[in-house]
Image (cartoon, rainbow, N blue to C red; front, side, top):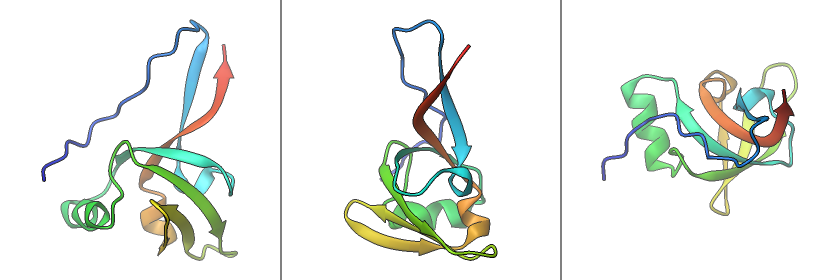
Length: 100
């Protein structure tokens, strides 16, 4: 199945609504996030897609290991541990927002 890797930002009725796009490593643990884009090479994108991590997927950041260790996330009820370098390339939409 072919999926396009485009940045999608949901429409909000509030004119001052600005969604937060962050890399996965910057987000707080325990929050539900939505994958927007993966800024990695072909093979990394392909592997993450096989694991169920593609744009539009809802994930939860479970924990982050100290001293630049791996990041644990929950994808569709399955716990995955990915390296911090790859996690930094996953752009997510935080449901927190900034008002301008």
